[in-house]
Length: 220
Ligand SMILES: C[S@@+](CC[C@H](N)C(=O)[O-])C[C@H]1O[C@@H](n2cnc3c(N)ncnc32)[C@H](O)[C@@H]1O
Image 1 (cartoon, helix red, strand yellow):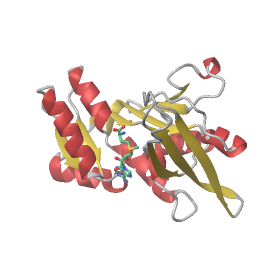
Image 2 (cartoon, protein in one colour):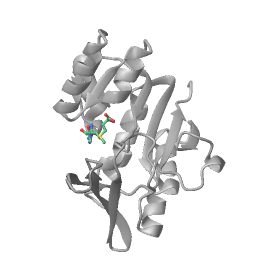
Image 3 (tube, helix red, strand yellow):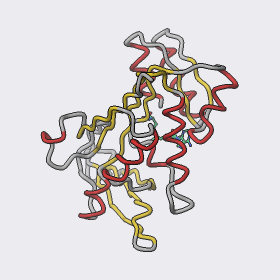
């Protein structure tokens, strides 16, 4: 959750980074450090978040939890019933204060499943080179269970140099309707739930690249 932590810190919010990957933490620390602010960085897993937090911030709850950049879709569905994802969403709800906010997003997997293509524009990355994304959808027992995105980035404007970067990322393809109800259930159907398309009102964007959900935990 590095870039959001750094942005929040530069806006004078207090916060921390919870990530399962030490590289992300180190990177966040370095970037925050350059701006001479203090970031609390701890290692935690979404799967054990409340317990992990007990060890370094006993009893703490937060004004906001931010899980953006299509991060949550990295959690795959090993049991084919999304039980781990549901548990993690409940964990996010648990560590919020009453009235606290969860910001969480996913790519527009409905579009990817229906068309076999990834909406080209990105609201998060500002890459000046052409990016080609090959989209593959794995269907298991009639249900889309995994999307593989093969990125091909031409890292030089000079076509003759043919410099390229290629990598593959795999995600769980969250459909908007299902993810919406999973989130509602994680807050016992009591939270205020707003959905945005590429951070705009839903009716303003035809084929969004991302859906962003904002959950407000009830006050009691
Ligand atoms: C696409 S990266 C986004 C990183 C960050 N949002 C950013 O933009 O700089 C997804 C992140 O999710 C983290 N992640 C995946 N599964 C996790 C889990 N179970 N618990 C905590 N973090 C996890 C990965 O370590 C990875 O850093």
